[in-house]
Length: 278
Ligand SMILES: NC(=O)c1ccc[n+]([C@@H]2O[C@H](COP(=O)([O-])OP(=O)(O)OC[C@H]3O[C@@H](n4cnc5c(N)ncnc54)[C@H](O)[C@@H]3O)[C@@H](O)[C@H]2O)c1
Image (spheres, rainbow, N blue to C red):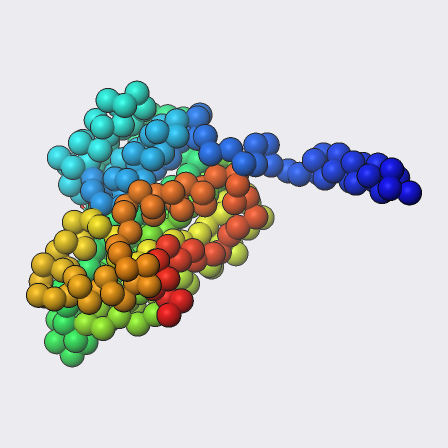
């Protein structure tokens, strides 16, 4: 009896393996893959670009910051990886289109894209925020991600699929005191991410978001620098009692781009030390 159950299981396993559409499900290697990262001159984008470089991908580093972008690409190359810097402002359609064109021209395809370019306003209550700040934040954080996905998806659709990860925030899941427009822009990303995931679910293109808590980057340094005592308060709001390192967010991004997450799409992954679990 025992023997026959074992045989059945063995048979099922063989069948499962045959039916599994993934070529290399648990692989964390990105050798041969082409990855585009926006906002990669610093902070989370830089950590993501470096992690992909270490994992063997050809990395296109995009940013408005020319010096920072060149520095990220040079670091990847110095460590034996492949990288190209392309200056691009994600709020301008022709620059985003040309960024994707240059990626394909240089490396032949586009497999994964990570949209990290983002900005944050000064800490002000809603009625004190001016219209120019609203427009700037929505332009970069919402229109920039929409434009980026538009041209990334068009390209991925020509080569059988791909994976996109958008950098949202814990403030894309809960409200943010004195950051209403930033929070609104990140909530908008949830709608863009989930809807894009649905639009392209049958085209082999997966679209997900990561929602970090506070991460030790230049953006966080600017935020805590504006308000005495804010750093301590913010750290205490994270149940793990600390900020994330950019590399911890990069690890989540690489997982969402890898074959190990092949049935995950339209998901917002909290990487927040328990911030939104409170
Ligand atoms: N640091 C955090 O605590 C934190 C938390 C949650 C979410 N995020 C999100 O993660 C992403 C990265 O944040 P970060 O902390 O690394 O920020 P950062 O300010 O350190 O880096 C952002 C990068 O985006 C680039 N950028 C800005 N506008 C651009 C544009 N129009 N076109 C192209 N590039 C542009 C900047 O030059 C910069 O290199 C952002 O979307 C941010 O909202 C950050």
